Amino acid sequence: MRAAILGPRGTFSEEAAFLFDRDPDILLCRDIEEIFGQVISGSTDYGIVPVENSLEGSIGMTSELLLKEDVKIFKEIVLDIRPSLMALEGTGVGDISEIISHPHALAQCKGVLNELNVKTRNFSSTAEAAREVAEKDLKGTAAIASKVAASLYGLKILRDDIQDEDRNQTRFFVISKKDHERTQNDKTSIIIGLKDRPGALHDSLKSFAEKDINLTKIESRPSRKALGDYIFYIDLEGHREDEAVKEALEELKANTDFLKVLGSYPRFHNGG
Image 1 (cartoon, rainbow, N blue to C red):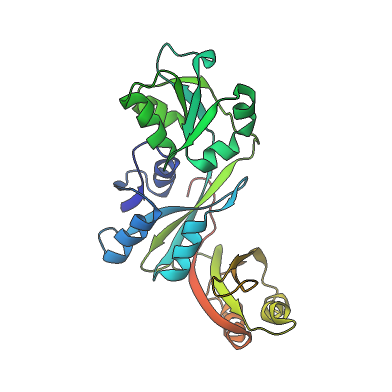
Image 2 (cartoon, rainbow, N blue to C red):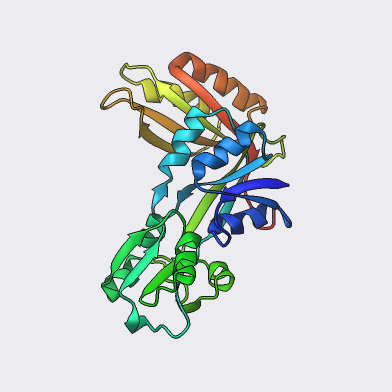
Protein backbone atom coordinates (compact mmCIF):
# COMPACT_ATOMS: atom_id res chain seq x y z
CA MET A 1 0.00 0.00 0.00
CA ARG A 2 1.30 3.44 -0.94
CA ALA A 3 0.74 5.85 1.93
CA ALA A 4 1.64 9.53 2.31
CA ILE A 5 2.85 10.48 5.80
CA LEU A 6 4.44 13.39 7.59
CA GLY A 7 8.21 13.27 7.05
CA PRO A 8 11.07 12.92 7.47
CA ARG A 9 11.79 9.30 8.37
CA GLY A 10 11.37 8.48 12.04
CA THR A 11 8.12 10.33 12.83
CA PHE A 12 5.36 8.85 14.94
CA SER A 13 3.33 8.98 11.71
CA GLU A 14 5.74 6.41 10.26
CA GLU A 15 5.11 4.15 13.25
CA ALA A 16 1.39 4.50 12.57
CA ALA A 17 1.99 3.55 8.92
CA PHE A 18 3.48 0.24 10.01
CA LEU A 19 0.38 -0.45 12.10
CA PHE A 20 -1.68 0.15 8.96
CA ASP A 21 0.43 -2.11 6.75
CA ARG A 22 3.40 -4.35 7.52
CA ASP A 23 5.40 -3.16 4.52
CA PRO A 24 4.00 0.17 3.31
CA ASP A 25 5.33 2.09 0.32
CA ILE A 26 5.86 5.40 2.11
CA LEU A 27 5.69 8.83 0.49
CA LEU A 28 7.18 11.49 2.79
CA CYS A 29 5.40 14.87 2.88
CA ARG A 30 6.30 18.27 4.33
CA ASP A 31 3.02 18.87 6.13
CA ILE A 32 -0.54 17.64 6.63
CA GLU A 33 -1.88 19.75 3.76
CA GLU A 34 0.49 18.03 1.33
CA ILE A 35 -0.70 14.61 2.53
CA PHE A 36 -4.29 15.57 1.68
CA GLY A 37 -3.12 16.90 -1.67
CA GLN A 38 -1.36 13.64 -2.58
CA VAL A 39 -4.53 11.64 -1.87
CA ILE A 40 -6.79 14.07 -3.75
CA SER A 41 -4.50 14.07 -6.81
CA GLY A 42 -4.34 10.28 -6.87
CA SER A 43 -0.57 10.22 -6.38
CA THR A 44 -1.10 7.90 -3.44
CA ASP A 45 -3.96 5.64 -2.37
CA TYR A 46 -3.84 6.56 1.29
CA GLY A 47 -2.69 9.33 3.58
CA ILE A 48 -2.04 8.99 7.31
CA VAL A 49 -2.75 12.13 9.34
CA PRO A 50 -2.79 12.81 13.09
CA VAL A 51 -6.27 13.73 14.34
CA GLU A 52 -6.04 14.12 18.09
CA ASN A 53 -3.80 13.49 21.07
CA SER A 54 -5.07 12.32 24.45
CA LEU A 55 -3.15 15.11 26.21
CA GLU A 56 -3.27 18.00 23.76
CA GLY A 57 -6.59 17.49 21.99
CA SER A 58 -7.43 17.82 18.30
CA ILE A 59 -5.07 18.75 15.48
CA GLY A 60 -6.59 21.91 14.04
CA MET A 61 -5.17 21.60 10.52
CA THR A 62 -6.49 18.05 10.11
CA SER A 63 -9.96 19.11 11.29
CA GLU A 64 -10.03 22.03 8.84
CA LEU A 65 -8.94 19.91 5.89
CA LEU A 66 -11.47 17.17 6.69
CA LEU A 67 -14.16 19.84 6.46
CA LYS A 68 -12.82 21.45 3.29
CA GLU A 69 -11.49 18.61 1.15
CA ASP A 70 -13.22 15.73 -0.62
CA VAL A 71 -11.65 12.75 1.15
CA LYS A 72 -13.02 9.87 3.22
CA ILE A 73 -11.81 8.18 6.38
CA PHE A 74 -10.77 4.63 5.54
CA LYS A 75 -9.38 3.55 8.90
CA GLU A 76 -8.31 4.79 12.34
CA ILE A 77 -5.05 3.99 14.14
CA VAL A 78 -4.30 4.63 17.81
CA LEU A 79 -0.61 4.83 18.68
CA ASP A 80 0.96 4.91 22.12
CA ILE A 81 3.34 7.90 22.16
CA ARG A 82 6.57 7.33 24.08
CA PRO A 83 8.86 10.29 23.34
CA SER A 84 12.53 10.29 24.30
CA LEU A 85 15.08 13.02 24.97
CA MET A 86 18.07 12.57 22.66
CA ALA A 87 21.29 14.32 21.75
CA LEU A 88 24.68 13.78 20.10
CA GLU A 89 27.00 11.14 21.52
CA GLY A 90 29.06 12.60 24.35
CA THR A 91 26.33 15.05 25.36
CA GLY A 92 24.95 14.83 28.88
CA VAL A 93 21.75 16.24 30.32
CA GLY A 94 23.77 18.99 32.02
CA ASP A 95 25.18 20.11 28.65
CA ILE A 96 21.77 20.94 27.17
CA SER A 97 20.86 24.59 26.63
CA GLU A 98 18.01 24.07 24.15
CA ILE A 99 15.37 21.43 23.42
CA ILE A 100 13.68 21.25 20.03
CA SER A 101 10.64 19.30 18.80
CA HIS A 102 7.13 19.56 17.40
CA PRO A 103 4.97 21.92 19.53
CA HIS A 104 2.67 19.08 20.62
CA ALA A 105 5.62 16.95 21.77
CA LEU A 106 7.01 19.87 23.76
CA ALA A 107 3.60 20.40 25.36
CA GLN A 108 3.38 16.72 26.28
CA CYS A 109 6.74 16.83 28.12
CA LYS A 110 6.40 19.94 30.26
CA GLY A 111 7.77 18.19 33.34
CA VAL A 112 11.16 17.60 31.75
CA LEU A 113 11.22 21.09 30.24
CA ASN A 114 10.47 22.67 33.61
CA GLU A 115 13.10 20.55 35.31
CA LEU A 116 15.86 21.41 32.84
CA ASN A 117 14.72 25.04 32.49
CA VAL A 118 16.16 25.55 29.00
CA LYS A 119 14.82 27.36 25.94
CA THR A 120 12.72 25.49 23.38
CA ARG A 121 12.26 25.76 19.63
CA ASN A 122 9.42 24.44 17.44
CA PHE A 123 9.89 22.14 14.46
CA SER A 124 7.45 20.76 11.90
CA SER A 125 7.89 17.22 13.24
CA THR A 126 9.71 15.35 16.00
CA ALA A 127 11.87 13.54 13.45
CA GLU A 128 12.83 16.82 11.77
CA ALA A 129 14.10 18.02 15.15
CA ALA A 130 16.18 14.87 15.61
CA ARG A 131 17.62 15.19 12.12
CA GLU A 132 18.49 18.86 12.80
CA VAL A 133 20.57 17.90 15.85
CA ALA A 134 22.39 15.17 13.94
CA GLU A 135 23.03 16.91 10.62
CA LYS A 136 24.04 20.27 12.10
CA ASP A 137 26.10 18.73 14.91
CA LEU A 138 24.27 20.75 17.58
CA LYS A 139 26.19 19.84 20.71
CA GLY A 140 24.14 21.89 23.17
CA THR A 141 20.76 20.96 21.72
CA ALA A 142 18.56 17.97 22.50
CA ALA A 143 15.51 16.77 20.57
CA ILE A 144 12.30 15.14 21.74
CA ALA A 145 11.40 12.39 19.29
CA SER A 146 10.79 8.66 18.95
CA LYS A 147 13.32 5.91 19.65
CA VAL A 148 13.16 5.09 15.95
CA ALA A 149 14.35 8.63 15.14
CA ALA A 150 17.26 8.29 17.59
CA SER A 151 18.36 5.10 15.83
CA LEU A 152 17.92 6.57 12.32
CA TYR A 153 19.94 9.72 13.03
CA GLY A 154 22.57 8.23 15.33
CA LEU A 155 21.57 10.08 18.49
CA LYS A 156 22.03 9.00 22.09
CA ILE A 157 18.88 8.62 24.19
CA LEU A 158 19.31 10.56 27.42
CA ARG A 159 15.89 9.75 28.88
CA ASP A 160 13.09 7.41 27.82
CA ASP A 161 9.32 7.88 28.15
CA ILE A 162 9.43 11.54 29.18
CA GLN A 163 5.74 12.30 28.55
CA ASP A 164 3.86 13.88 31.45
CA GLU A 165 1.16 11.21 31.50
CA ASP A 166 1.56 7.46 31.07
CA ARG A 167 -1.53 7.22 28.85
CA ASN A 168 -0.29 9.37 25.98
CA GLN A 169 -1.90 8.31 22.72
CA THR A 170 -2.35 9.87 19.29
CA ARG A 171 -5.21 8.94 17.01
CA PHE A 172 -4.53 8.92 13.28
CA PHE A 173 -6.93 8.73 10.35
CA VAL A 174 -6.08 6.87 7.18
CA ILE A 175 -7.69 9.01 4.48
CA SER A 176 -8.57 7.87 0.98
CA LYS A 177 -11.04 8.57 -1.81
CA LYS A 178 -13.43 6.02 -0.35
CA ASP A 179 -14.27 4.75 3.09
CA HIS A 180 -14.27 1.16 4.39
CA GLU A 181 -16.80 -1.60 3.84
CA ARG A 182 -18.82 -2.83 6.82
CA THR A 183 -17.02 -5.00 9.37
CA GLN A 184 -19.67 -5.21 12.14
CA ASN A 185 -17.34 -3.25 14.44
CA ASP A 186 -17.41 0.18 12.87
CA LYS A 187 -17.46 3.89 13.61
CA THR A 188 -18.72 6.77 11.50
CA SER A 189 -17.46 10.37 11.61
CA ILE A 190 -19.58 13.34 10.57
CA ILE A 191 -19.52 17.15 10.66
CA ILE A 192 -22.69 19.16 11.19
CA GLY A 193 -23.60 22.83 11.16
CA LEU A 194 -26.61 23.84 13.24
CA LYS A 195 -29.52 26.06 12.39
CA ASP A 196 -29.62 29.20 14.55
CA ARG A 197 -32.52 28.43 16.89
CA PRO A 198 -33.04 27.29 20.50
CA GLY A 199 -32.60 23.55 21.05
CA ALA A 200 -30.89 22.99 17.72
CA LEU A 201 -28.17 20.71 19.11
CA HIS A 202 -30.64 18.68 21.19
CA ASP A 203 -33.01 18.23 18.25
CA SER A 204 -30.14 17.25 15.97
CA LEU A 205 -28.81 14.53 18.26
CA LYS A 206 -32.00 13.06 19.72
CA SER A 207 -32.50 10.66 16.81
CA PHE A 208 -29.25 8.91 17.76
CA ALA A 209 -30.49 8.39 21.34
CA GLU A 210 -33.88 7.17 20.09
CA LYS A 211 -32.14 4.58 17.90
CA ASP A 212 -29.69 3.55 20.66
CA ILE A 213 -26.65 4.79 18.70
CA ASN A 214 -23.74 5.68 20.95
CA LEU A 215 -21.89 8.94 20.25
CA THR A 216 -18.22 8.50 21.18
CA LYS A 217 -17.09 12.07 20.47
CA ILE A 218 -18.66 15.51 20.12
CA GLU A 219 -16.34 18.46 19.53
CA SER A 220 -17.26 22.01 18.64
CA ARG A 221 -15.03 24.20 16.48
CA PRO A 222 -15.54 27.77 15.21
CA SER A 223 -17.26 27.88 11.83
CA ARG A 224 -15.17 30.93 10.83
CA LYS A 225 -18.37 32.61 9.66
CA ALA A 226 -19.07 34.68 12.77
CA LEU A 227 -18.09 34.90 16.43
CA GLY A 228 -20.12 32.37 18.42
CA ASP A 229 -21.03 30.28 15.36
CA TYR A 230 -19.82 26.67 15.62
CA ILE A 231 -19.71 23.41 13.73
CA PHE A 232 -19.60 20.02 15.41
CA TYR A 233 -17.36 17.01 14.74
CA ILE A 234 -19.09 13.82 15.85
CA ASP A 235 -18.01 10.17 16.03
CA LEU A 236 -20.67 7.51 16.45
CA GLU A 237 -20.78 3.74 16.68
CA GLY A 238 -21.92 1.87 13.60
CA HIS A 239 -21.51 2.03 9.82
CA ARG A 240 -23.31 4.53 7.60
CA GLU A 241 -24.92 1.57 5.79
CA ASP A 242 -26.39 0.14 9.02
CA GLU A 243 -30.15 0.67 8.90
CA ALA A 244 -30.34 2.55 12.22
CA VAL A 245 -27.41 4.82 11.35
CA LYS A 246 -28.79 5.46 7.86
CA GLU A 247 -32.17 6.51 9.30
CA ALA A 248 -30.54 8.73 11.94
CA LEU A 249 -28.44 10.51 9.33
CA GLU A 250 -31.51 11.11 7.18
CA GLU A 251 -33.34 12.66 10.14
CA LEU A 252 -30.25 14.70 10.95
CA LYS A 253 -30.38 16.42 7.57
CA ALA A 254 -33.72 17.98 8.47
CA ASN A 255 -32.40 19.52 11.69
CA THR A 256 -29.02 20.84 10.55
CA ASP A 257 -27.72 23.58 8.32
CA PHE A 258 -25.36 21.10 6.67
CA LEU A 259 -24.15 17.53 7.15
CA LYS A 260 -20.90 16.03 5.87
CA VAL A 261 -20.30 12.30 6.34
CA LEU A 262 -16.55 11.84 6.56
CA GLY A 263 -16.78 8.08 6.31
CA SER A 264 -17.25 4.78 8.09
CA TYR A 265 -14.29 2.68 9.16
CA PRO A 266 -13.31 -0.19 11.48
CA ARG A 267 -12.82 0.58 15.14
CA PHE A 268 -9.09 0.30 15.88
CA HIS A 269 -7.75 -2.61 17.87
CA ASN A 270 -4.14 -3.65 18.40
CA GLY A 271 -3.02 -5.98 15.65
CA GLY A 272 -5.33 -4.64 12.97
